[in-house]
Amino acid sequence: MSDRQTKTDVILIGAGIMSATLGTLLKELAPDWEITVFEKLPSAGEESSNEWNNAGTGHAALCELNYTVEKSDGSIDISKAIKINEQFQVSKQFWSYLVSSNLIRNPHEFIMPLPHMSLVQGEKNVEFLNKRFKALSTNLLFKGMEFSDDPAKLKEWIPLIMNGRTSNEPIAATKIDSGTDVNFGALTRLLLSHLENKGVDIHYKHSVDDIKRTGDGSWELKVRNTTNGAVERHNAKFVFIGGGGGSLHLLQKSGIPEGKRIGGFPVSGLFMVCTNPDIVEQHHAKVYGKAPVGAPPMSVPHLDTRYIDNKKSLLFGPFAGFSPKFLKTGSMFDLITSVKPHNLVTMLAAGAKNIPLTKYLIQQVMLSKEKRMEDLRDFVPDAKSEDWDLVVAGQRVQVIKDTADGRGTLQFGTEVISAADGSIAALLGASPGASTAVHVMLEVIKKCFPQHLEAWEPKIKIMIPSYGVSLLDHPELIDDIHHSTARTLGLHSELQPVM
Image (cartoon, rainbow, N blue to C red; front, side, top):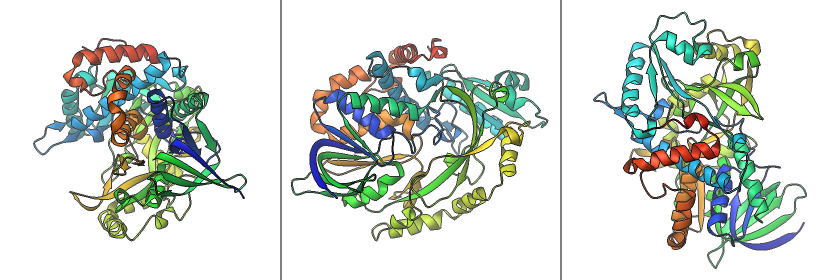
């Protein structure tokens, strides 16, 4: 067993979309910095970023109903939808820059144009969807959205969903053609391959077991080579913990006060997948419905066309589940070992508040395949069991923290925790996650490298033309970005004018 020691400028823990994005940004802004990546699995993007482990929607709030809330006066609050859409535009601009600069190639390997739709049933839900449509479609970011409650029109849009439908219940949908399907696993692999070409050291099958601050303010990591058991010590001025569900344990080991009184609640998922080409060809969209009453936001049912391994398939789900693991490849003790004296009360408060959620997850775990097929038939009335298989998706760890809303609040979103001096940052949480990775990593750069921002800003604006401004305050930028990213990324269905 060796105990080798090395020093570097930046260490990224986890070879997923977040580390890949931060590494790529930093290599453009500070090409001379030495960057090292540690990943405990044999290859890149194998956990939450993997194409079979996430929805791959390209979350732009075009179809996700939980991003638009009906207020007590009956109006629709679209502020969260606008925020998420703008953040996804940032991702598209950065990807477009990388492709146009030949830093990554073949954008069709990771992004494809695909209509995004919302679908609801029942008079009250149809009324809500119509109000949502009216609120969004007048906004420049959502131009081109259509609404229909005409079954004949819906049969044109979504034949697979409308065929065999016998219910007389009102039904309606919105459709916008500027949506995308994003293969975040493929994108992660492209980015890390680019970083390797730029001289970044990427170590697979290397697990970070411990992390501690040294006397000079830098960080020392204890890293174990999982192939031969050798232990190495690596020192860095800046550490990013981007290990998905594994981030919480490492954040706790760092001992920074900002990581106290934070917990995590794991939620697993299952999808039904159809690869029967006759059925797959009858559907070409991502169609999001409404979550059942009592279900968490990440359990919104959706029927998605996906492009994986250059093949088109259909995914339906997610069906929620529960496992105490924080990663798909994690330990059954992950949840219990994450409970510390400083977050015990927070975790207990969350448990007391979320008994209905726990009950819902237990019910989901107990579902048989036929019961899941019944849920699918609400979407696809003619679905046959032999055409659909179960796929286990990735683990998501929702953040639990004390907020103004009360102790032990379960957060449904993505959160960055960083030390006061900016020397370490950890990414926690889940959706919209990968879709907003570039925005989130720019926030990490702002928080952790404020002394470099002035010098870096001109380059950031070349990579992301809308950096630092609101798109809605600069409508001329929306059209420019819309067309340039569509051309560069091959999103030809986006080439209609939006203004």
